[in-house]
Length: 214
Ligand SMILES: C[S@@+](CC[C@H](N)C(=O)[O-])C[C@H]1O[C@@H](n2cnc3c(N)ncnc32)[C@H](O)[C@@H]1O
Image 1 (cartoon, rainbow, N blue to C red):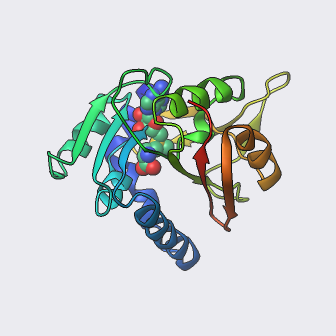
Image 2: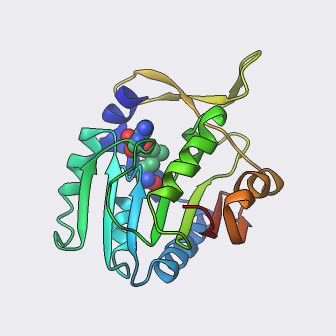
């Protein structure tokens, strides 16, 4: 997965510029929602990638520590020259967040689908523990759409699903990508959350909640 993202970094943000008015509208709504909930917060962003959402969230957040495991995506993120006193891009692992800092908000954009089902609880516990109890969390992800982003691959005896992606250099990668409906998201997140809000769009879903566990 890491090699895939290193290679994909330079072409990744193309996904945000597809000529589809519904997609663009949902992205704009997402940006507005993030800026609203992250206002004045000290944010821990996991799997920040090229910093596309960091750049948008920092318009209202007080500070963002944005981590990603791929050096090349971080290089692109750092090249955005976001205010250094308010954004700290760091190499790190979304499963090893202990001691990252002091946060009252968590942001995870287009990351949750890549968490193997067997590691969801581990990820959520670590993510929430890295923030203060009562932190605001915002996450967003793709909806499963027929014909978009390649066919969904199911493998016998494996609970995760995958997508096959071809990069501009012709390399083909099978990427773990899990999709959820509203009731699955509610079941997964409600043990850790108060005021959980799940919004399902056509292209994307987004969730927002307050953490209960530290
Ligand atoms: C789909 S991209 C999302 C990037 C960005 N959040 C966005 O929405 O544009 C997933 C990101 O997860 C990163 N990643 C993969 N495994 C990771 C891990 N264990 N810890 C932190 N980041 C990881 C990849 O390098 C990649 O940048």
